[in-house]
Length: 256
Image (tube, rainbow, N blue to C red; front, side, top):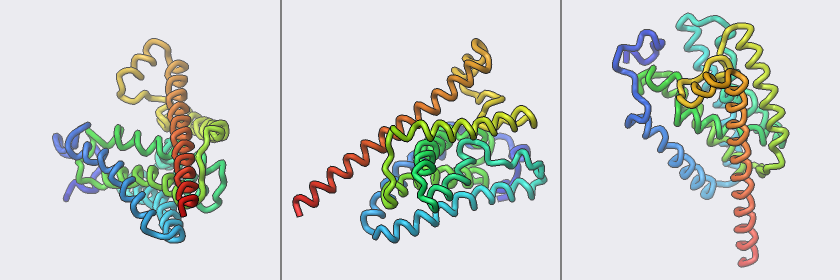
């Protein structure tokens, strides 16, 4: 318990949990389990109750991030540049509440395409958490809870709030994503940070090789292409899910 709130440099050697260790595998398996539970819950509760849950989870996202900022501040990390929500997942603390409460189609599309992508990626490959902190640690739990909500909120938005994903929304997603990346790029190069991993490459073999052979332009092109491809796949998947759901609803009405 003495290590629960400590910073990474105070973690005892050998106590950090590893990549694809049992705790990490359980975290990954919790994604489909949570989605299954959410689907079941929406089928057994009214749309009004589901929308209340959606709004509550949308508020919980920035609250979880605020908890992390307070934790860092209490540990002596008061440098404001390090506390900005400029990672792909960090930006969701702004976009998720805006998307849920304004019901803007553009913002909801951005959240669907990037929030699910960021949430899954951060749980499957929790950079800065796995290999750094013990499993039973504030930062581990906070990060897992936040990124799980990044997956669940867009799905709930689709299930109960009338949002219909479409690949036609990709251009608007790309514009917002590019603006966020430009902000992160400016902060990274002016203040020496690494938001969106634009300045320092994650410890992933093929990305390191791309940087070594092609430099930053090749790395940025690869990173951007991978993110946009992920966004496109999620929009296509959501569109097909919506089409299938509409087909089932029409069949049910016809049978009734």
